[in-house]
Length: 471
Image 1 (cartoon, rainbow, N blue to C red):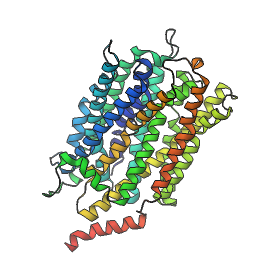
Image 2 (image 1 turned 90 degrees about the vertical axis):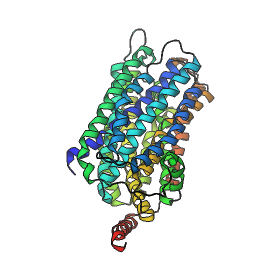
Image 3 (image 1 turned 180 degrees about the vertical axis):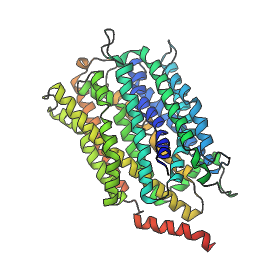
Image 4 (image 1 turned 120 degrees about the horizontal axis):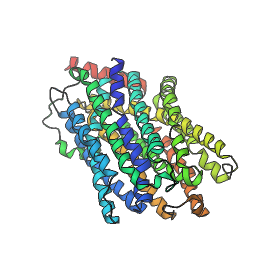
């Protein structure tokens, strides 16, 4: 596989990074703190949009598994999602003036669903395409590394440019994040760069179409429109069931952390928007060290042990600033020292979390092989629809949980840091620190039961190769 093809495929994931960062970091804060929509309503809109995803993701996955055209199974769906995506996300950040809570809730819900649906048409076939392009046990880890790399580049480009270019402090708004007039232009920016990345991927991977698998006609297969039910049938495979549960929990807690990042940075750490914008570049450290960590650990250990190592070390770094806040040690630091410490902790943690995500996708592709051996059907779309659903839970369930938590602790809206009660700060630190870390580490207890090792996967591939000869 040519390097340009690998890069082009990876660039396609840039769009998902744009969506994740714009939703998790900016959208909730915009509707809650700037427009005044209660956190529980904003979180509920996110949750309902996620439920719609639960139906449409596997449906699109199954449709792309069975679709046949001279452009292959995946590329037509990717193109349908790419073209209008930018318009939808631009509208999401530009609600009309004068809407009350009901109107804001309806606008947020409608366009959040539309953005998610269009991303589904692109994202699920894109994930499935990668599983078809890479065949080897370790080659998959390498190709997935490109995809995860550009996902984080997309998040980085959205967060850094957002904080620095669109939400700088001004005389009227010392906290630029509270300036409602800046958000429509930010939405347009997100729409343009995401759509360009999608179209780049479609063009760069077109040469792989002749070598991709063709759909197999199975008259007994259930209708793709009921694929949501079919997803639950895949849960009978133990390896997939464990990976699905692990991914859902990890991505949900990642969504909680992302949703609260502005709250934690502003109210706990005392950072201005420009400082948070600087901290948004910390994932550069993770982007550089994450793929090598995944490659080296997975070759030294099996993939399951690599997952446990990366999530444990990543969590230690990720939540250490909140622990220091609770002990009072963070307040004893100068502002520059605080920024440096949080920057390094965040950057290093992102490296291990990137490695963790690479392992999840690599192991998920192995379960697709197990499915093919047992059923005779290769259905990457169905499996990666479930993976897409788990990823989107990082905003849906994550924002819902974060929104409920903010309402429970009665965190004030549009408040200056000096006006927030000490009790609310402590409760925020406890939830965003020890509680979130404990839930994140629970993924180790789930993933330790994953049954596929490298040796077992080799046996699966031998079984697949031998099937035509025996038939």
